[in-house]
Length: 130
Image 1 (cartoon, helix red, strand yellow):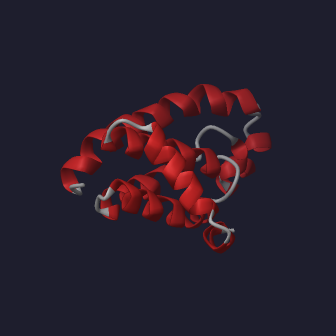
Image 2: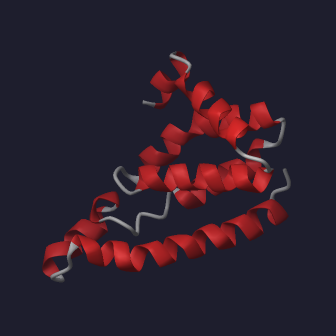
């Protein structure tokens, strides 16, 4: 999927759309974080990171910044499969056994996701400079 996005130019189109729509580098980091996290809710974290690879690299080129902070944002965001049971095999294993419902994941996962986003937006640009 990541290779296909690159070959057909989808990665650069998505990256250009994201960089054109944002006003600052922190907002770019937040946008990539949220996009990666959305992928992570329905596919594995490894697959989400691989799909986002060409996108964040093209976004870094378009914004003329180092790709390192964007890579770290994507890496952290790929690990945020808290909002749905499909994002992680562990979540699926405990869904029925624990008597959980889909809404339980949303109710508890969204605050955790927001906390990860907030901490990432503060620490990533400090540790890995744009």
